[in-house]
Length: 229
Image (cartoon, rainbow, N blue to C red; front, top):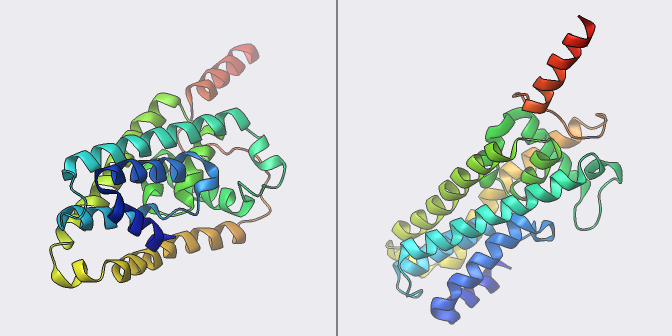
């Protein structure tokens, strides 16, 4: 998959930016795109910009990727908010495997709202964390702020890293080998998250609260105390 997309980026010239943005959006926003290689593709794009194979300014590539990543997470959040508890009720599906959802929920439970930023750097978890955030009723404005910041940090770091490392002759001459190494390294935290989700199995299904209560939870608690008084 990675080598095929790399060939596409190499052959399309400036239009490759649109392909890159589409892949990033699909991986983060369309749940069926969880298998797409976002990390390695961003790094590869940075290398191609540095070697002038992709004749587009780096800032343009960063901007396009950032917008695609932010819009993708916003869509995934809306999907999760619409599903609510039904996200866990049917035991997963072909386009949304339950083991991946559980891994994202475990990651969200451990890190709270900042998981929206941290998950950007964890394949698989990256796709499903915004869905879990929506199901857990994370305030939309807060999610958007974390989403925009995390999207910029992720896309810029990968692209800029590829851009500067692409100036090293060995890396420029072995882009596919370096890309495969990045894919292998990026799958390590995803594997750890999946193992933790399996070990913590058996929890009651349903959206979980984060370490920071939402405004609706606070208002509900105050109303209950008033009625008792």
